[in-house]
Image (cartoon, rainbow, N blue to C red):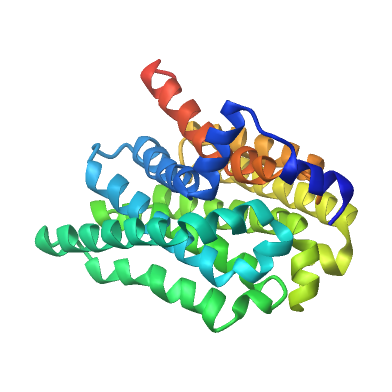
Length: 290
């Protein structure tokens, strides 16, 4: 661990930093971030507001990420020691809360007979493939798996509303798949030490920090250009260009990402991209600009 990284972990945090770290380490913030994609999908696809898909995504994300903290605790000891400490102290409680929430939304889904309710078991398959089967050890495979898991949010919203095959939902699904795969590669920058110790091959370990940043920035630009093309040929309406705000956000943090950045850079700033986009989408919709 570098000196700057060590300092970021041990320096006494202020009240605001403590709250932010608690939200990040408890996985509440990442759950809110995932739920933000439900909001973005509902607004852009012009769907009626329903609280159930919001609750489903929040509860499932909280459970999956809380469980993953236990399976990855050995790596976190080196990559994010503050998170590992939090997991040891409060991890069982967060997993229990996540599990209860997960079981509750599954029960409600069965009671309401929502379409393809069996898909709520998919997160268990993903976490098993990622950590237990060990796909996270395969170069780029774990990044694609993360992208696929997050792409399941807009697609799942489409299934819930019975519009999964519409162009709007499919474009959102493809966009999320691409952007979250890029974000997952950026996240590997902070994990270089632990991944090296655990023998996990990642893009930053193979090509280095500089080329990882430049490659992710280039990939982000390509995704943005593809989105512009999709809008230009009329597959989706101009309102979908609002997604370029997220592309700009990802481009910025791709170029700024550093293995020695504090946990809040990755857990709050990077993951905050989803909340950032949803806030812009909701504001523009409320103002009549979408």
